[in-house]
Length: 430
Image 1 (cartoon, rainbow, N blue to C red):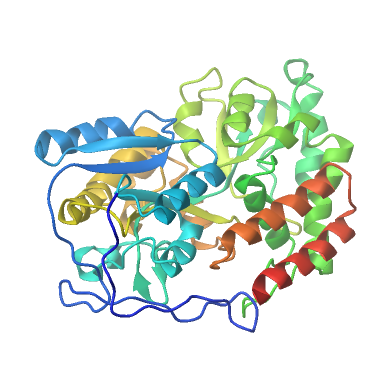
Image 2 (cartoon, one colour):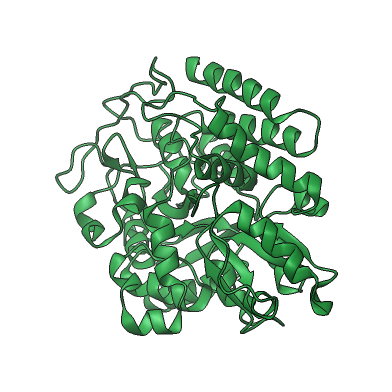
């Protein structure tokens, strides 16, 4: 353990009276001429903390770093695959002021919360090539205009579909609306090889993935979880249409009942094993599915919506530096290494992770090798961020609770949204 360096300026981060907007909070220190950044001193061993690496690509990259920096080796600390569990363990480490965690792989929606509580350091922007990155991705790493993390990967939801079965059923293109999706399923399921397949799944277990899928349904129906000013705005006819699509799909079997237990990996495995015609998931699935029994039999398209293509929730991970860490000079260099265009291109090639750099999406050779890149770029550019709030834990818990109640039939969509509106307003008032 080590005690935290005293900061000259401290303030509390609160929610603005208007709703879920954030108010000013910061810290001051000294480094590189940028006011408010920490003092990046000390070299030696560090740790990298992230969710379980299901792709098998992270340790080889760390091995590359360790070979180049034998006196500044990085140890990989793998947390659970569940994003909520990752967040909780990182918060527990910060609250005990432990130096066990150095560089954190944080979900893009955690930046405001972690920065406001001063669990992560303000970073020097001039040390990173942010101008070459997609603007929406860079914004996820900022809080009150300051850079508190560096984009390592982005994420946009996409619709995976079985090209072979749709083609054989006489369906020439993937669905762009929910109505088309529900109409295509029975046509394809008439095929002998598809008779035991289910139609569609996403991530509907009561965890962060449900917040993502619920938000996408609401946004894709023309609704919003919060309005442009950050106020809760979920008890609306448009939001109800989005939630009704999910609830109705469970009732009529479009979404199989077991999908209520799905997280990302459950859905991927179901799709790869031939149990699903359609799957909403992240780009990492693309390369893994290519090594499965459905290789060459699938493609991706934009998520469907109520009246046309839908809106993804903006996903991805950024790299942040724990305020309580040692050897911060090494840590800063490691963040630069892991977020470089070369490294993120490697993760694109080896794990289908969406890179933050705009140029990689327009590289002709890469697009030829990874034909999903144009779809993914559009998904990211048109994605809608989840609420960027200090009390994000309370907000996402409320969304998960009410959306799950509607999906399992313990509440109507209307009642769930009414209760969610009340919950979000209470969180905003804290």
